[in-house]
Image 1 (cartoon, rainbow, N blue to C red):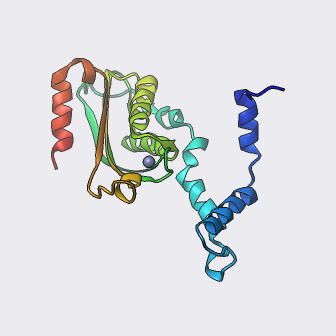
Image 2: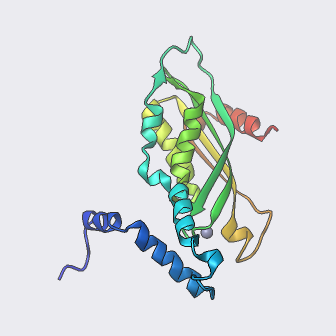
Image 3: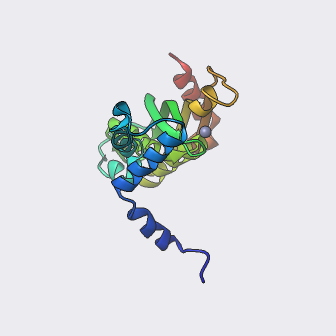
Length: 203
Ligand SMILES: [Zn+2]
């Protein structure tokens, strides 16, 4: 008997979980916490939770590259950084499936291509709507923009609070986590990096 399933088999298995099965799992959890899933107020809860989960995790069905594919080559010689500050971010940690709430700042230095500004926020959104660690999320956003746009540099900062830390465990309500990821000129040239950090820390 084969003990280790290959990735395709696991993928197939993932695809056959129906909404009904997922609702059943939520019902089990409701019962497990000591509630009655047949109580009137809770009857439609599994359905609602599944609907909410579809939204929280819709990023698995989305391709971030798609949002960066429409570019403009007419930059009129603009060669400095473009910064999108304070992009609101809602994700879920992969360790507790608890919310991660915060902001992302994304910057790039165009070489020949620029994108519509909302597209940077879209990339943040796609990777956020998955189970994440903040470190991986920060890197994925930066690397995707680097790969697709091939700019001179990319910088991504995420400043977020993790509800698995603020609402449970050590209950540090005001603690936020800051992660940075620099590529290209932002990594190699500290003057770019310092200017970027100054801009994002300005109110
Ligand atoms: Zn967590």
